Length: 282
Image (cartoon, rainbow, N blue to C red; front, side):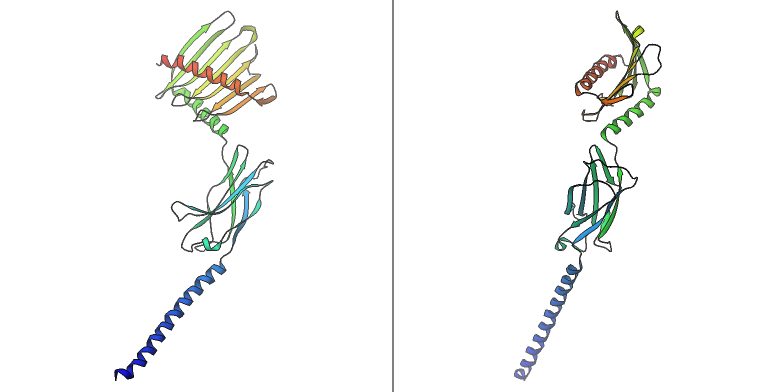
């Protein structure tokens, strides 16, 4: 009887093997179909939320990233592409084999135009989890390093009224100088110096300092005799690393760039004033 059953058992085994092979082929076919249906590029546009002009030096950067990976994995990018104006279209090609259907992918874009950077307020999902293969990215301008320093200085000026104050003066044959130093809990933060030159007018100099004592900004004004407003102003500012990021000068209606040497002289003067006035903490 066992001899009679043996052919039947063999046939059953062959049938099961065939079914398994059919299942494997179906799975492979499904994977191949997904890959075949996967696009090979992400397309879209990049625009400014508030329209504005770009310089001829503006460059566009677009990236496709797997943000599910730790750390995120860059899938493809368009790097340093010249862009004359926005909105502008883009096409970012990629290999579909690098796409995991269970992962999340995003498009990000930036435009660098000299010191000005335009960045997206958010990332744009694409390709998987029902997201399209197209992204229309809107960019906002980031403050430049000089604008950050200017804003920090404005905030400091507004806070001076609540600080403790010390005063001092000096004179020589040609001028009389009076200064005020302003302290908060961190120490000396601001100095206002006025030098009276008699019939030559006066010079107003304002020194702003960071909480760690580093020079933030120096503003120097030349005011003619009998005048209320300055006819010449120079401004120099440094970021948190001590790098010169703001250097402007105005003489009447003419606006220009302050030289590095003149900016250094202002910085040295600010450091010298800090050393003197900080010792008179109230």
